[in-house]
Length: 105
Image 1 (tube, rainbow, N blue to C red):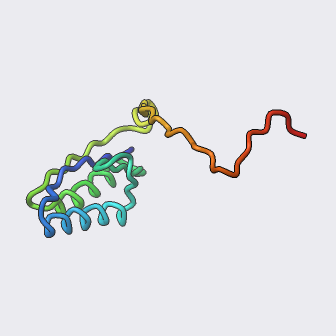
Image 2: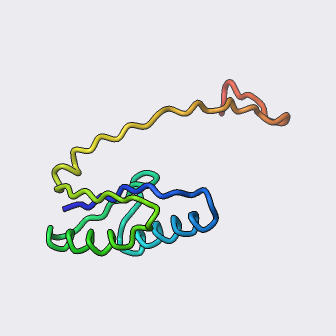
C-alpha cells in the first residue's frame, strides 16, 4: 500500500513559508519521500497503518493549506508512467587553451 500526499500551501508571507517548510519537514520525518514538488509518497505495510498515518498527518495540515492523501496499491504504483521534458543544453564553448583532437593515440 502506498500513500501519496499532494498539498497546496500558500507561501506569500514569511510565516506562510515557515508553515510550508514545517509541514514538508514533518512529511519527511514521517517517512515520505518527494516525488515532485508538493507530491510526496510513502510505502506502508497495511491499509490499517496507512489510514492511521493519513489521519495523523491530516491533522497537521496548516489551516490555510490543503492536503489530499491518496492510497494506491503496489501494482497501481508500479504502473505510474513518468515523463520528463527535454532541456536544451547550452553549447559548451571550449576554453582558449583546449584543442580539437582529430586522431588520438
